[in-house]
Image (cartoon, rainbow, N blue to C red; front, side):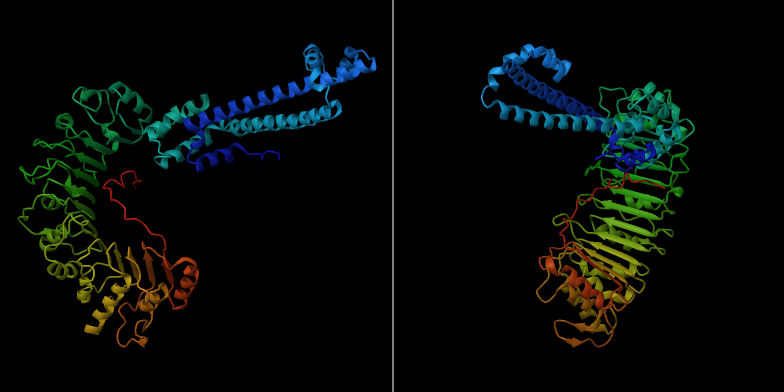
Length: 586
């Protein structure tokens, strides 16, 4: 089959869709190895063809001798000049053709035809390889620039760091190297792990007109290395501090702290996103980021736990009023004291380790007027602190993740469930994960969730049918709908459905006035009468199987606009504080 003709642009787009795998070092090596295999195969086939031609020449020489014809003249007229030069070698093969000469000659001729075709196919494949990769080297500069920029915007491709990807783009051919070096937007990301100050400056020199993202997250400074050769310092030829818009710092040793202390406070005036991983915290206060007035996103992970020292203030000074997104992994600093400074925070995520020391109550109530999304993870007592000391009048989304078994629990679940609806009275989205002791008790105080429209309950270790029965019981006792405004309900990680609760029956319980266990029509307010979307996921669906499509259609016949029953068991993931570290930021 003839190869499909492709323009250079189509080939480039295919490469881009394949996450630039075709231009990486690995693929180039595979390409070279493939060509080598093709050439080796061609050589082997040519060798076999030569052997067969020698055998054919031996047959022809033997027949000529029997007929009294001069073999040399026959070879000259019947076979190629290449075979004629090998007649002496063919003579040595004549004894092998004495047995069944006609059949052996016919077989050899068939083999010769087959191998000739095989040789042609290999040559054709080799030409296809060259035809595929030649347009890559013939692309225009403008198209190459568009491809390079689109590649960088995708972030980390094929587990390849951006800095490594940029260097790979320069190793394909001379044109690619020239275009990459002349495109300053490519050189805005640097990981100076093993680079000296002069190398860092040279690396970032082409990106002078643009902002820079410096990643020092995985850089560990040992005592045997000079910090001034690894990190930007005042006496270094590293003129990028004014252009750095995102900085990821990994403060593992005291050398890192010493470096941060000596940096001037106006080192990063354009900084917008800062990620700090703190180990072995010292008491010296860092003022390097105090003048970063554009800082809007702050992520801090403090693992410097010291039970003897106890919690204290974070040894950093920031321009707190500009921070809108706050991501804290608190181990040994007083997060409540820190939040009192971030009065303008809109999105807050707090991860409190179970072994963290007890918190000291803040000296005054915490008022967060702009907070709209609050995520609390690992220890429910952090939410208890918020409910007791904080007011969030604009809170719209609340996500509560309880501790894993053995890592802590709520001291007083009943008090907790009474406070939660009051604290989240204006919340429209409530997400509860691993809150085993309170997930059903919250529904008892349903009257406070007047604005709740989206409810998610995951990994709660209860059967979904029991959850619906609980809602039915609450509505029966109060004659009020348990969740009057909820339009979307997500339940998951059930231990398995009882026999009387199939997927269709769940939909009936959620949408209709009929309860399958009694067969009677429900009288009064339906617990979730406005439900439009029901998602049942993360459970072992032994009963789904062939009934999946039938049950899904039956649910839709009940009046549900959208129903999703995911029959694949999804193991609860281990949450990583830095899972969003590589996400693109607006």
